[in-house]
Length: 172
Image (cartoon, rainbow, N blue to C red):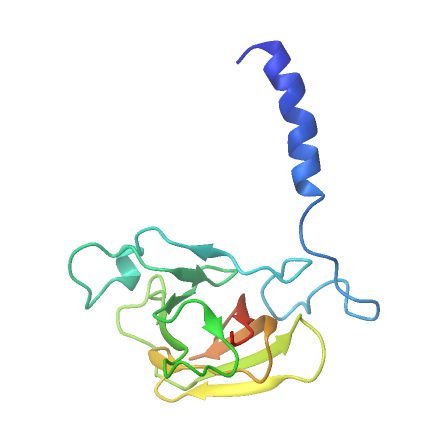
């Protein structure tokens, strides 16, 4: 890369960093609690469309390119069968999500399965909404009470991870 290109690239990268989502509202904690995984400063769904990792593609055949979102720690992935996720769907479809947990390293047998408890807060603030997937990570339909960006805390089998998911308003 020539020097003039590098000079132009620096301002572009700096400007790109300024166009992200707004910061958390005043009064929101500046840092996550020490007991949970690290959270990004602003709510941001990190949707991927590439191949699922080997640990998450059991039961699938062929190409495993699907829309999915990894937890912040990478311990769980939400495979989105419905996209976009929509608040108050009127089209007859469901907000179907398959939750797949990464196997625990160094463990020869799986941990005792407990429900996957989803504690969601819209835009990372406000009153939490709790959903549960009986039997632990697996297939689910997760409807949330309003459109917006939801920060999810996911607890199962003694493990915790977080992710952000966006629910769009119903169209029409």
